[in-house]
Amino acid sequence: MTLTRTPLSRRWVLAALMAGVAGPSLAAPLERSLRPLARPEGARRATEADQLIARAALGSGRVGFALADTATGELLESVNPALDLPPASVAKAVTALYALDTLGAEHRFATRVFATGPMQGGRLAGDLVLAGSGDPVLDTDMLGDLVHTLRARGLTEVAGRFLYHDGALPRLAAIDPSQPPHVGYNPAISGLNLNFNRVHFEWKRESGGYGVKLDARARRFAPPVGMARMQVVERATPVFTYSSTGGLDEWTVARGALGDSGARWLPVRQPALYCAEVFHTLARGAGIALPRPEAGGGPVAGTVLAEHLSAPLSAILQDMLNYSTNVTAEAVGLAATLARGGQPATLAESGRAMGSWLAARTGAMGPLFVDHSGLGDASRLTAADMVRVLIAAAPGARLKTLMKPVDLRDAQGRPRKDHPVAIKAKTGTLNFVSSLAGYITAPSGRELAFAIFTADTERRARLGPQELERPEGGRNWLTRSRRLQTDLLERWSTLYA
Image 1 (cartoon, helix red, strand yellow):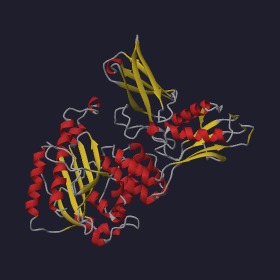
Image 2 (cartoon, rainbow, N blue to C red; image 1 turned 60 degrees about the vertical axis):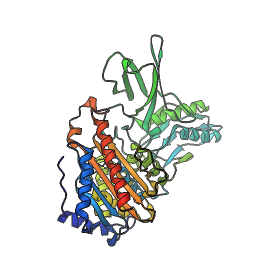
Image 3 (tube, rainbow, N blue to C red; image 1 turned 120 degrees about the vertical axis):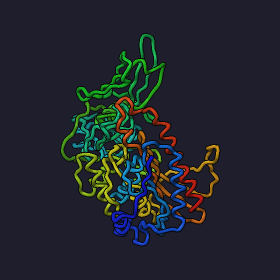
Image 4 (cartoon, rainbow, N blue to C red; image 1 turned 90 degrees about the vertical axis):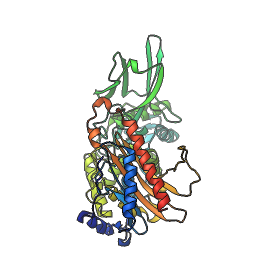
């Protein structure tokens, strides 16, 4: 592995100076911007970091990291800090700030049910309209609560149509089309999302074959789903195939891959129809006679009969960072771009808008985002730019409070819960890509911002379609990369915190 240390180029110096032009929400005063300082012991410490990288044995993989003091902006340690690498899910930390800066921490997504006509004796003379605003965390139980509200208001029959509106966000068939078709973390996105746009597939061996079930389960409700269908077929590979026929999600699964029984979540490619169908099933179960759902067009107007408001955006983002939910990242990222006056037709267009915002807010030099979740491996970010983001967000701990604690470990690999140094960070993982970025807080209160990016983009690019889920050597490479991250955190916690 060839290690190249990036000199303090004109690009680096300009980036450090530009960090002082941040806007009001993420303002980073000039004295807090990332600034490299000469240190007599710098050469020795750089050599020690190089030794950790060499020990990780990441092959042709490349490493870039940066560590800085959030109070002064002093760059304490770095290797290849200006190297562009895929951020993976660390991109969600940028998305969280983008959404907070645009929509506000108290923003709530609304899902409403409208009536276009009067209701008399339980009968609605007009249409019933289910309209979403892009809520990424709406689930079946929440739809059930909407239905309960309608029934409590006396609704029993709809004489007109049952329409659904999903135009609050662009309709996108998948987050990253290059992913395997069946992975649940790569569903469609729309203005009506449900259960993170996944359907629950369950199977059990029966005499003569398999019994299969597709449902939209949550904690209280698990209605069957008809817009997605599954067929068990005799073949060895691929395990799953997908096609869209007549507006339905058509799946097949290889019989030999099923075993006796099991379950998994599959992505939904038509989330608005999925949401409307589940609502229809719940309504009929509650005694409300609805016609079959139809896609609505044009603006939504009428009387609001029921409304569900999501949790505040800050709570949604905390769950997004803790559980790394891609649907949440894409929905809030798109909503932020639209709120800023953009008209994105694709995730790449919205990602570019987020990159422009980041450059203006923090002085980041040329970040590239093809989405808001980090799932697309064409996104690029440097460790230095990620540290600039963390420094800019440090006042008020706007980002740190949303991040997940990271434990340092003892010699046996056990978490050290009593360690005096606190670390909160966001991880990111793709095949042959691993990233970690966040904050180290010392008992004294000193706070450090760090970003560690590792990637073997050449090895990743050689993967064939059948290798994308479990590539040979992928798990071992990831383990070594994470060991490097742990070694660096332990080193920094000892030296600086």
